[in-house]
Length: 221
Ligand code: SAH
Image 1: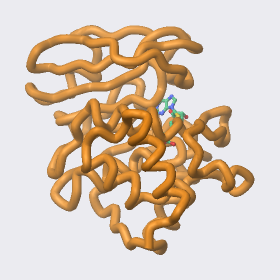
Image 2 (image 1 turned 180 degrees about the vertical axis):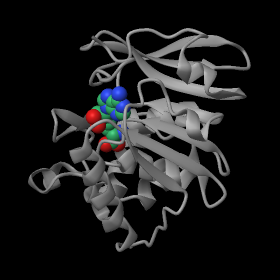
Image 3 (image 1 turned 135 degrees about the vertical axis):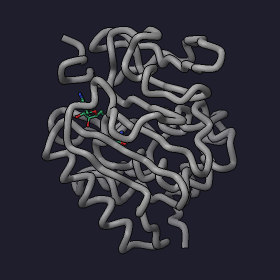
C-alpha cells in the first residue's frame, strides 16, 4: 500500500504544476522518500522541503527532483549518470525510471554519504513495494569530470553545482549524440538549472536553484 503522506505529496506537487509526466509521478509514488531521510527528519519526509544530511549536504526538495526528472525525460532502457548520490533518493527514482534494461551509475564524493545511500537502498529493497535496483551502480569517487567507464550516457544529471558549462565539458563529452544533461550552473550559493540537448546543441536556463557546490578537481573552488 502506498503511504498516505506520499499520496498527499504527489497531489500537492501536481497542484503546483510539477509531475507533468505520468512516469515521474509513478516513480515518486513507488520510491518512498521516507527511507532516505535521516531518522531525526522523518516527519519532514513528505514535505516539499530539502532535508540536511551529513557532510553539510542536502536531499533536494521533491519539487526540484521531479522537475529535473521531467525535464530530462528519463525513459526505460536508458543509460544514466548521476553526480552526487547523497541519500540515494534520486538514484532510486532514476533506477525505477530506466527499468530492468537500463543502467544508472550514481557517483558520490563522500564515503559517509556513499554508505548512507547504500544503507537506504537496502531499506527500500526490503520494504514495500519490493524494488530490485539491480540496474543501479553506486560508485564512491570524484564525479566532477563525469564517469568515463560507463559512458556514453543518454542522460546525465548533476545534483551538485558547477561554475560553467560548454561543449568541451566532460559531462557533454560523455553524452550520446542525442543525450541530455541537466545541471545547476553558477556560484557556490546560487545557480540556474541548465538543460542541454546534444542534438540541438542548446543550453537552456530553466529554473533558478540553490544546490551545494561540486567538490573535487572539476568543482567550484
Ligand atoms: N541526489 C542527492 C542529493 C545530492 S546533494 C539525493 O537524492 O539525496 C549533492 C551531492 O553531491 C552531495 O551528496 C555531495 O556530497 C555530492 N558531491 C559533491 N561534489 C561531488 C563530486 N565531485 N563527485 C561526486 N559527488 C559530489
